[in-house]
Length: 421
Image (cartoon, rainbow, N blue to C red; front, side):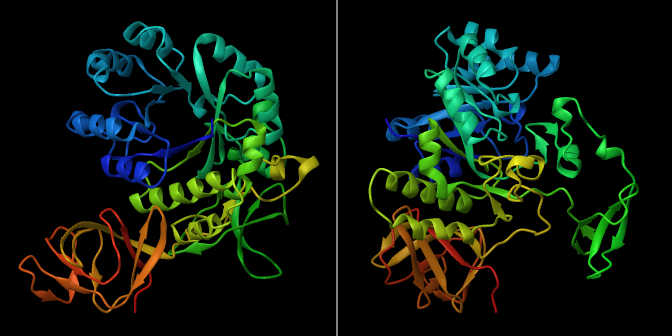
């Protein structure tokens, strides 16, 4: 059995995109019980379409219930269990252990439970305990190294292991502070917190370069560089995770599911990242090298500076494996392209309906991408309004059409360079 590729689905559109661009499974949530409460999420109005997509694709859908439940949320969940039973979920992702008996009573002892990364399971003893409690899969804390993953898999071989391989990281240790470790090498999670968050800092200039930096009161001359933009700065912004160049090492460590972060990200992000990892995973079983072009396309989505996180050690907090790959970054988002929308139905030969998210104009050069099409460049297209009259631009929310000689299909994504002259 090959490794599972698990993609984020923040809404119905992203669920369709995730499956179309190569995901084996997707995870979604309801606003009331999900840590991504600001994602559009899913409601009862989506149920019929989710059921149909599930039936047609044969792929898996996991329900994310990874908040820590207070009494009011727990009562709300109990009141919604009958409705939730109607959804075609293959497993529930939870971090609050109190949900185990509730879900087993509602769905039976055979209900599949996945332990959320929020539970910070990072060792074999914890993994074995959760497995005995009825969890079939553990989503490891992002701090787990490849070396430790191998040990966990060896100790509990029947437990499925899932790990994040791409997306946003955090300065918190799966919900616990890492600031002390980052600045002093003293881990709060091992009883040695230096209370870094309470220190006194000042904004100063580096003596050599004149760059802005933070200086702590008791550490004169030790600078933490920052970059100020419009009067504000990010000083605790971690790099993004990207493990696409290390698929084989993840497989060798015993990972069963590779997870992409990003329920709050765009459909374009879901498409580009999912297809890149799909190509890379498939290539790990063959000698095909064409996946590398899709890998390079990861540079074209909105992202922070990439790193390999903690997989190869603990970076600046591990003196034995000192590296800066997982430290914070003073760089902002990199964004090469703007997501413009989707190609809709073909209404005539070479004429396609448009489902736009951002404006496009005839003077621009567009690119179309598909699950097996890296991109098609087009600077000779034309635009039509709802009456099939030629127009110079097309906008979101209107009935419009694109005329092109490029071989397109419904669902292709339209993008253009984010900087337009």
